Length: 591
Ligand SMILES: Nc1ncnc2c1ncn2[C@@H]1O[C@H](COP(=O)(O)OP(=O)(O)OP(=O)(O)O)[C@@H](O)[C@H]1O
Ligand SMILES: [Mg+2]
Image 1 (cartoon, rainbow, N blue to C red):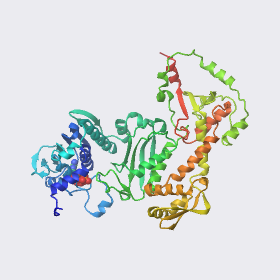
Image 2: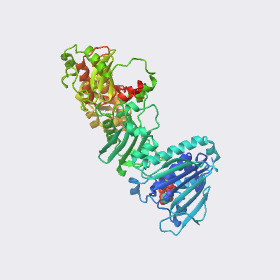
Image 3: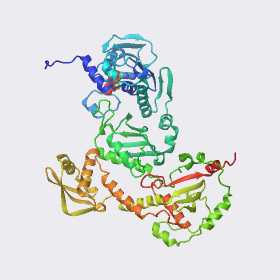
Image 4: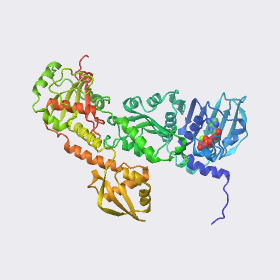
């Protein structure tokens, strides 16, 4: 083997660049972060050739003094932190003093800047790490960094780049993340001379509308919560509008886009029993957390962070989003069948003869005189809501957004009339959710424990044993009791009473794995909820069961009062609205 020698600074920078500047988008991200850190109000980005040929970022921030220019491109030189204590509470996006040096090591970089008190601007050029002498330059204010021919001196890296279009796509994503995380800053982006984005400094809503799409926030639930040391605000998609794409998943922590396992898991949990199969949650959320409670110094591109108490944060985020999504059918804006399913557009008019509305409802009212006594309804829904009898006098009652039942269709759907038009309800799905929510509420969040007559020992690794010992309190709050029998054996002494039939060891392993990964466990509540969901499914009114009008009305009232009543336990919608306008369109009325 060759003898050991110190690497040259240039080689060190190139190695660092390999980590930090993985592709043009990473260089763009670093430059944009510097502009934001410099307090810029507007930032203009110009790209060419997917960012490989040119990245120019011009800002109107504080600027850099002449004597600091060379330091700015030197490795381990930063104005953002000074002492180890500063590293404990980082308030800026940058802190390592590494980005510009890394970019400069693999490109031709020029840095022009003018600090507020300077008579004019100064420029330095760095060519493959060779730093030139500052020269006078023209610039009104702020800083302009120009990066040309990225990776020209590292051909191996260059070979890993994709087409210009793909690299541009990544750059645009990086741009959007920063623009979303800092809506107060105005941004423009152009590629090969054509303007792609022009964003005025604005509030979060306007920025989300501009970048994620107008429909997103309008259809999403508003999240706004605060906890000890943190706040969470933004929008989370309502299940009915979720798609299979993962592209709109934006989570910002103290103004930084991150991809965090703990929080992603918390968000998935918040959607657990309201999102259908392969649908993905979509969200744009801003988490503010006291800088001391989060460590951003864990990943070369800072896309990951560590939390002081990830369990508490997991719980906070899950609850905040759960609460935002828990709207009852009364609180939630109606999901328009026509809009979601293209119903109006799909139907070819007019296949059926028109029946005047008044006549229609009389027919149905006649056909649907209550046949079963209200006692059946009482059995079905318990004592909570008193049954209404017959058709109401005021079908447009404001208190009853789901309106009043008209009829049952093929034993499956309930048709109701409300102020806006027609409401269609999947009666089994809706009833299932109502029962499920009621079971969950009565079981409450505290899980009572059932001690096992004979403790159940199981083989565990040392990490499991340590996790069990460190989390006895959390475990017992979950209705679980575990104790170590030896360095590689744990015993289950008690499990949540509701899950009495579960395989205790399997359950214990899953809970420990969760505790280790996310600092909190949803496994038990998830299992319990699965069980309750099955019970609800069996308890719910079956299809083809004929319901009386009072029973159907009672179902509507329960939906209005029940959280998450807009989705069944498997995330399918339980009801749709067909407005009079939709119906008029179908029948080409008023054209
Ligand atoms: N657009 C800018 N406006 C004002 N100062 C800047 C700008 N870009 C860089 N600087 C200065 O140059 C220094 C070095 O920038 P660089 O990005 O290399 O490191 P950093 O931002 O401190 O840390 P990190 O490597 O984590 O990004 C910064 O600390 C800052 O003082
Ligand atoms: Mg930086």
